[in-house]
Image (cartoon, rainbow over the protein chains, first blue to last red):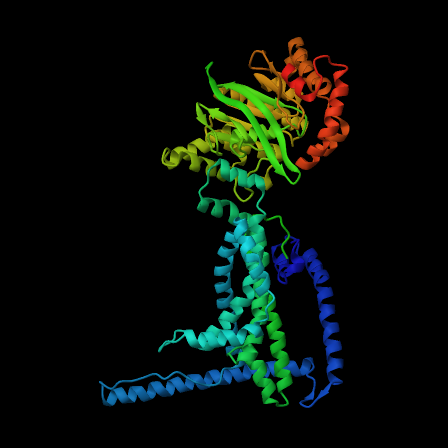
Length: 332
Length: 308
């Protein structure tokens, strides 16, 4: 349990796994006490601070208002789901009647077009960020391996990578929007244009850490292992699979985790600016809405964005632990 | 058995450096018979590893070349298996899988799956590693890792086994164990071996011939000592053997009298920086000439080579 400080749940697990639950329980509280104090102090400062900030939309939301708004958003979501269910039930009844009168009648189920709730937006954002991240990884990992193995190629591409790496998503966005509108033309599009725009923007921005870290990992393979590969006359593919990939996995994952973090940040900004569905649009809509609840709802979104970003990184960490061959390495 | 199996002829090697080319080896000639156990000994930085790497095909000689069974060596290959100093096992594979990688590469299409498994296990048994064959390198000791490294090389059924200070990184007791294991295996398989070593005892104990190399740069073969001790050899019995001690003394005298390494040059050679060595060339030759006063046969670095 040496990594317990990095894993929220491991102290809990330790209690169940331990042969001496009493002692672990004590250890559990010892481990928990500092984070709890930290959170409590933060809530206190937040509460006091919020009461003293007056905006045109009322006072800044404190922890209590945010809690209320969270409940409100959950209620709203449930109400919307009920409406949706009712909508489909009505359609089915209507269709059943139609079919009873005339068995040959063509019936249609029309999709529900209600307003997406906060939780729908979370879902959209998650799908978009993961698709963008997967697309970027599919490009960046093979490209990184090629660049890492081939010094001239690295020299040729390095200036371009350094040039594009620091570009903000907001700068790419108008170009991506125009290009997607021009090129992604089909009568029955599999994906919405807004989805494609967000996805491409996210990919463009989160490509670079994975690309560079993979390249560095690959070029840093120990000379000894390269000699082994040469003496065994491994084929290019075997060399990549048996030697290059495993030895660059730590660096690759450093890159992947940075990329996913960037992807998540970029996505929120892109959604906000381009009015693509997702959490960013939720925040923007609330801002434009300007009701007395808006600030509280935005604050909920802020916390949720943070929480999801944190959880995405934890998921990557778990995957990294799974595929990493060096189980002794301390990963955090 | 008496015909030449491996032959190095007039091998020179030059490395390009920012200050012009640096000649590490000069006219290395060596003939090795099948089944012979050869040790290369010399001070650090004298180019022993370079010789081995040329035979392995990892380096290309600038002049001259290497013939193995009449065929020129110009790239690495499994018929010249290498045991590296720091084992060089793939850390993400178990001992078994490390050997398997080599076996699959060499015997693809020649052995069935079951035969390969048997062959891998047989080789791990030779080095006494069957008990830990499904452990990864980070779970076993340094000596065990080196055993697996040897098993991997043996499993390739090489024509020549090349060992680059195979026991250099091990403690004295483990080293002795591994040397005994190696002698056992050698009795059974009678491989052709070239081993690099710093250890005089190791060289005398294991070898049929000891090749002593002069100091670099432009290092070459200084003396060759035939070790005519009966096998199997026992380190404890040999400790009092006058013949053994005579051989030992001969190697020591070559290393510490004829090829005494100047202090400053030795320190510079440690990081194996070729440029530094080149800079020390000046110091080296002056030291050599002062050394010539005591030993009649040496006048300058180059002349001494001919004398030897």
